[in-house]
Length: 401
Ligand code: HEM
Image (cartoon, rainbow, N blue to C red; front, side, top):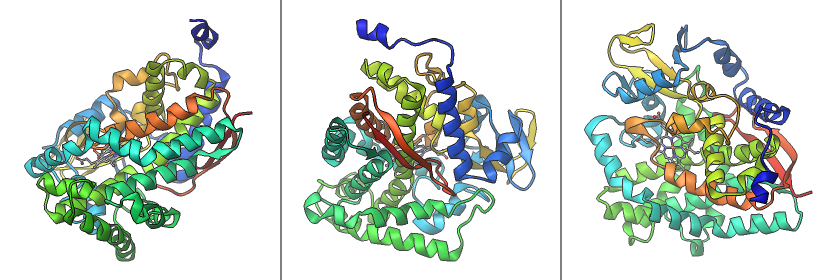
């Protein structure tokens, strides 16, 4: 009880929270130096932006679009299918709709059941997390971006079915990680399609991972691709799913872990969050709300209609500004926890709600748990990542003073 009182803080948003929020905005600007200031200036809740599409910044309207799968699709001009179908093939969840999409999700769901996720995270990340905690305990400086990259690589290795004894670390190394991250780096708002050269490069990286996944698919159920075969996926569906997981679930984690850690340290709430598991969870949700690692979702309108006061034509590109919708809840405040009312909008909503959300939460809980054991942690160095699709730090070095 004493500890709870010790870390209770002034309920007014303090200057430290303001600093934390400034660092966050700087990450958005560094990632998207042209698009972010432009879109940031567009007033909400919904507005047509010439040359780009219809921008939605209001949480309720945005959720309405996500839930209306007849009116808005991921397949269509300027929608995600334009980007990912040439790289991943036509049937990889994030470019599917309707009954086929629902059926594939149902078959993949057991991979993300709590027990499966806990096992994946404990086997893949347990040792690295212990090392992180011990290094901090010894007073060493640790770059949380490098740590998150190693963790993401370990998870990729498991998703493609590489066992540690096969030298997974040598196959999924920093170089491969950089090449995976380069794929999403090709994407910009103004150019919603990849060039033939970019498609060829992206396919090259995924082919390399696919070769391992193909071997694992043919093997027993102890690997993720082997399990997919047991769940009834044919080889093409399994390889497509692996590619989709690698593309969607890597950078989002590498972005979110250091950013949530920085928010907690910058705002002075690390000690508060470490005092109870419920507080740690609130801090993760609130951190995901404020960071919204996947800041925008895209759809194409299938028929004429309206979003709020704005008329929409069939074929219109819809820019769902989740980052702004989530920000309407105010500054980072895990005590008040405005994230609770948003129903995890940062993971999407409806038919395409993030399939990997349980895996993401398990990874964040594990890593944050290691950091929360060091309430005096401070940021020793930070550098934003420039010109990337998913905003984040290029370096966030922390240490216990
Ligand atoms: C903090 C981390 C993450 C965030 C913020 C995030 C966010 C999102 C969002 C917003 C969507 C919906 C996109 C849309 O409707 O257009 C989505 C979909 C998806 N995510 Fe995540 N994601 C994260 C981690 C992961 C992980 C770790 C995986 C798997 C390894 C994953 C796999 C997927 C897949 C497969 C979809 C497509 C689902 C479908 O279309 O049915 N995500 N994610």
